Amino acid sequence: MKSYKKFSSVPGPILCAFCAFLRLESRLNMRTLTAVLGIFLVWGAVSAQARKPKATRFDQFGKVGHCDLGARLDNFTIQVQNTRGAQAAVISYGPEGEGPGTGRYFLELIKDYLVNSRGLNPNRVKTIYAGRNTDPTQPVIELWIVPKGAVSPEPQKYETHLESFHGLFADEAASDDFDQYYEDEMGPGIPETTDASFADILQQQKNATGYIVVFSGEDLTPGAWRRLAQSQIDYFKAFKLEANRFKMIFGGHQKETRLQLWISPDGAPPVNDAGSEMSPAKTIKVGDFYSGNLNFERNRTAIFTRLAEILRLDKTVRVFLVVRLEQPVQEEPIAEIPSEPIEGPEPVDLTKLVEKWRLELANTHKISADRFIVVFAPPREFEANQLSLWVVPKGQPLPDPNESEEIGSVP
Image (cartoon, rainbow, N blue to C red; front, side):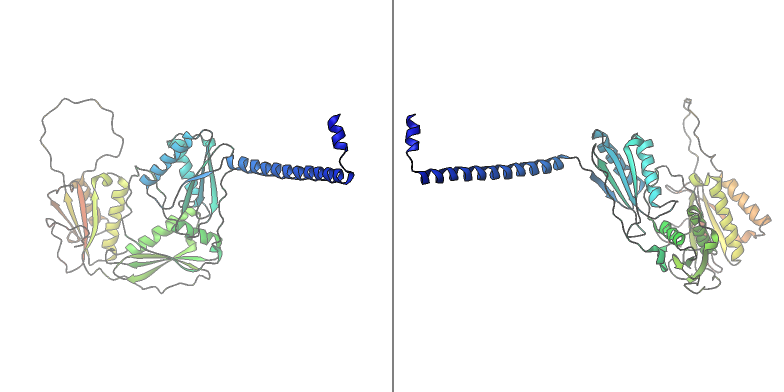
């Protein structure tokens, strides 16, 4: 009661002003509280968004060999397996279509390795074809780890304008390997995409012609330029392109063998044909063929077919074949240990093989004995059970089989 009386004794105007101040302070506090609450709500939403799991790019690469690719995918698999509930996302930028070197081909290749070689559950592997790369000759592969609850990565889209491309598309060094087959024990890598992109352009331009132009270098044997061009055309069948979409041109002779790919929208030849080949001016070392590859019949057939073709196309050259056989080693007899038979082709007898070739060249192809010359030479270190082959022009001496060769030299 005492305080009430004291308060009531305050003059009216002062009391009204004080009440107004209290009401203003209350409104200011409410506004401040509302603002602070709004800040906390925004901060909470941002924090929740920041805490939401996100996909992270683990690796990115282009052309790589099989060992490099295997190591990258192995490390990628380990990281995915160590991230509980995570998905592996693989993005590929490369040519459209089907066939080796296309973007979808790389996705199938990588997923097969992750699932069948590394044991990832196929449901944990997502593949995304992102379209063509900006550089049509190179692929781009991205490996992503997508945690549980995260959104898959969104690939970029590039404009390439392949539907209007014309002219020279590729110019590369080339060589003739006599169509030799080599067992691939390590698995494929990620190659360049030049051929796949060239096929992609022809698929986009239905009326265009693909020209294969070959310039014959000093290392090519007679007829090899045509074989290189035809082999390239045959390869494009893997992209569902018919042979009539292509034409081949002999560009002429020069120091280095090169193969060019051209796109001609109207079918006009991009360069003039050089006409007939000239005979080689110097001896050509074709190569060394080891027993490991000669054990495959397809390789023996390919070599003989090329030999017969060379001798038929240029009647002035000779073929010189050096045979190096492994010398038998006297070993002390040891008890045989039973073992399972090794799968693979039967070892070839090189002596019988070259004799068979000599008879077939003479009887079937009417090649005289002085144009197919075979000599047996002692083996060298790391050079046993092999055939070394040269093509010798008219007037040139035969190579000396006992003369050591420098690496990279051509007799």
